[in-house]
Image 1 (cartoon, helix red, strand yellow):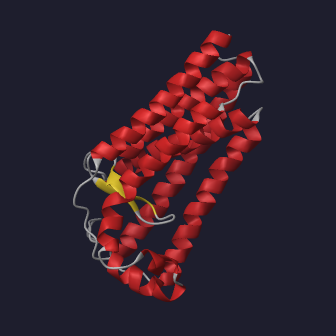
Image 2 (cartoon, one colour):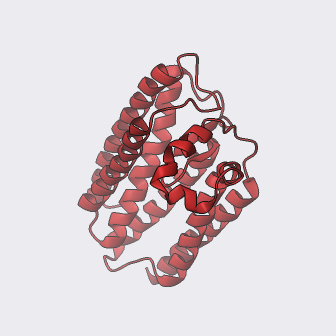
Length: 239
């Protein structure tokens, strides 16, 4: 069991993250009223470059706030990282909960959504980020549980060797379909050319998701779960 202080911290982080989830969903409600008054659907509506930059910076600011909550709350570097994952996961889950309550969207867990715009557009069925969020909660929970017993616990190199590639493979699953679409129209170098950004945004409005590469996503998720199991098993032996 967690000690009382850890339970209290997790409680307040949960409240904070749920509030952040509502804030995020409220912003999306406003954006959809402006750009999708008849309901959100692909292809994406064209937005000006200034608005696109503002939206990307808003997403970056959200990540900074979630990371800040974890940094302030954690006792060690490892727990700070764990609390960031916890906040991110709760925020992401309740983002969808509040959208469902406010506008009845998503219709199902298989509904396609735009997940992020950094560094390129991420898309996928709603259930995919929810699965990732549950995975993050599991790792964060184990980190805090074992930190209660030993402040010196940390994620070691063999676990990072699994966590980092697993995360990258998962990101690839979200960007795979979109990048296939865009690379049929542009070269890699075009994405780093400021003069091409308006043209890239214009072409992005023609994107309609075709299929989600579940095999890539599942592979990434299995690697992440193996890293979490390795961390858990190692710490369990040390207790």
